[in-house]
Figure 1 (cartoon, one colour):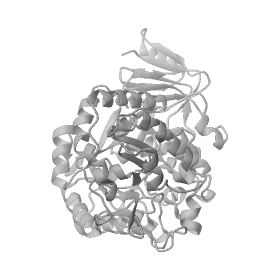
Figure 2 (figure 1 turned 60 degrees about the vertical axis):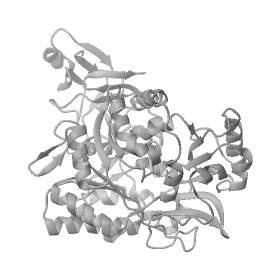
Figure 3 (figure 1 turned 90 degrees about the horizontal axis):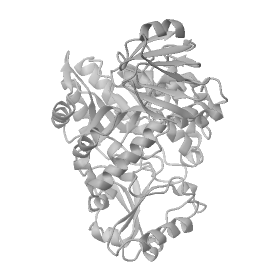
Figure 4 (figure 1 turned 180 degrees about the vertical axis):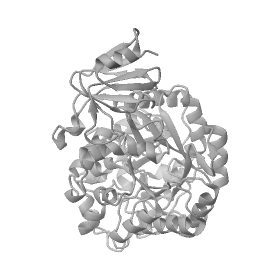
Length: 532
């Protein structure tokens, strides 16, 4: 591990806006100083490596606060539709027609991150269309949000789904006039995911290496990693294996890791965090991870629970994937145990109900400063803002959704778009925020998310953040959201040397150019793992 001196640029510490220095010194795996190069050279002594910022900037390393690492490795092995220029139903079917030709009959074929809102037809393929291109192979195409998908007849048959199969609790099987459409929503999709054969370990390891390279190239030094433990979730059959697979991957991954465990009970989550991730209970609060829960679905699949109908689907308001009574019981138990909880919640009705539960726990059991989180917290009414503030909840939001949803969100929610991702309102009320991607649902590119939070194209501009505020979601506020602000999140002497170098300053370029900025170096624990 070399001592390093960063020079010839700006060091943006993220401690407060406007605080910059001309150089930064790293000794071992810690930041040892910021200031003038001549002074820092004296701190480092004779042996150090100099990294020329070339007029760029040094920032704390980016942390993705909502990432599915094992699922991302799995996605890398399948037909990822993002970036393939699929702009119509026919283009999608052509891709699968060619893919099926290369696979033996009976082999599962998966497509990932389909976004029908980008198609000219604005619809899923029909079951008949999909059956025609893949008559002998089970096919499952997951929508980009991971909360709905399309299965062909072979896949439906393998999953035991026919026209008489009842909707599972928290899910819907698509039908028209009693006939299957192939569309599966929320927990109905799990039935198909559960029968897909597990991939070989060698394939997953190749996926891991591709994910590692991608994250490092984006300046990501850590993630808050969602790990499931059962088949009853968006990972399907791979869910029970996510933690063993992550432990297998761990040695080859340099990233800081903060686990959020999707477990069957509070006790199970604590046991996993303690045994597998060395979490500790300090002063009555568990440090080192939390419990991940789900309440509703997504805007894209029209399964997020709203107070009023979707503008483009009369009579549809979404639904809960877990009853509020069950959520309440679990959150109260976790609060008593001092365990942090993060709840996937998107629709305004769901956000309101979950926020009320957190407030009730705080008032009835007592304040423990647990920093509970609402993941996504996508649509927030003005009345709910007050509840979130009083409950002391962190809103873990994904600005990358702003980028991907901007072209169609108004079709879904109409005039309510002003309450979707209300970043500025929440920040002005001193409600803590942090940023992530929900990768692999979205591509894990912090600079794209930062740009989206600043420009808000397709959304209301009054909720836009300043570039500094947007950067904080992935740096200082990310550290706060995991109770690790004492050790990371800012460029402060004594903190861990997790750093990223950018070729341009996101505080100075036009907002629309932020996502065009290039990462040139990524350092984790004092070691440069990526150099462009």
